[in-house]
Image 1 (cartoon, helix red, strand yellow):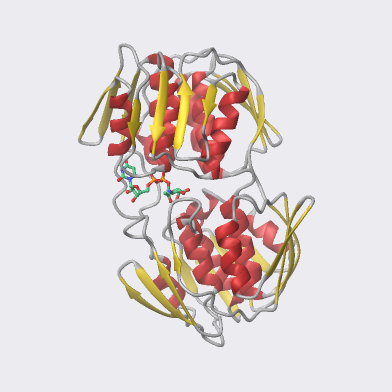
Image 2 (cartoon, helix red, strand yellow):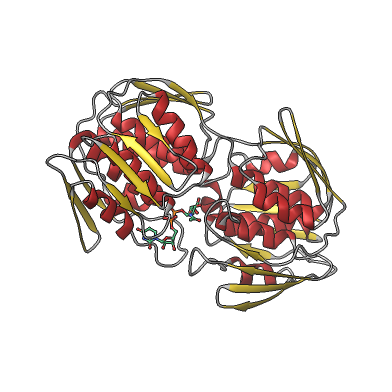
Length: 418
Ligand code: UD1
């Protein structure tokens, strides 16, 4: 079994590279289906979720080629609108092909998407949005069938600002006659990135980053090149590694603007984070002050994806930190794993109370989802002696060259292939 071997307990010092955002490139890849020309996606990360999206695009009849960090997608030859169960279940973002296929072909035959097990992850908001735009969207067992004679512009409100449902609605809106106005839309930076990509293709989108998004359907889309935003959760993970271990790390390519909530927490705990021309620098003493309570919320609140890594950074803080998960019902699965290192964490359902301990000791741990994996790595880097982290395929879903990146900052991390 593959495992990361980490000899922890040393400060980090050096330069790490931030790649293109997973949660941005996946909707952008789905959006390529709506365009008959060639889209060049620059800064495309080498992660397994991107490979899954490539396999889906090729299955649909698109030509996809990678040249270095650029992915070229040509959907001119799109020949089908079904996605096999195996590919759908490899990741959550496969559901974004629903809106894209509906816009392009007026139909989609899918099954429920997979992805990390964080509790119930229904798709009712996605299906409701398709319904509001005039499609017949049905779920029978795990099969999703969507048909639309003509999609029509509509104004409607999402019950919750779901990131995925907002993206699906934006994509389906491209195929609508008339104007789509989406209220209570998600405001995440990745929504802004998708809107910018769609505009580069010729779509008329406005209001991204606010809770009222507008798309004028029916504009012809042409091929274009676009550079994906830097990954804010990869950035947050490495900031947490440096915060927990102490040291001086430069994150090349990182941006501050999408990360204020995380930077504010790390700043309150004593880290110095400064933005420079080409990235972010973090300086930390290795002994943090508890930042107070942290509760996840839709953007611009504290991101659910950063909850586990920030908890891992606070395991040795000088006092108590509370974490409340409000987005997903089962997103504390890192807690029992972190206890193996000697962490003092009490769990009350979706709330965790972390009492800082003087020392963590290396242990064997198993990642059970992507950000759980990130947290285990952040914790193992602080633990004295050797740790072994399995569940590597989860981590590969979202982190390019993790071991190499950490080694460039002086960490002793190797990926063992057995
Ligand atoms: C969520 C995060 C996003 C993160 C991504 C990957 C939020 C608001 N969203 O996006 O920032 O990048 O995970 O980890 O933090 N829901 C429904 N019905 C639906 C869709 C969602 O009830 O049809 C519920 C979910 O069960 C969950 C909440 O809405 O409680 C958030 O879901 P959503 O934003 O859709 O999740 P993702 O798009 O996966």
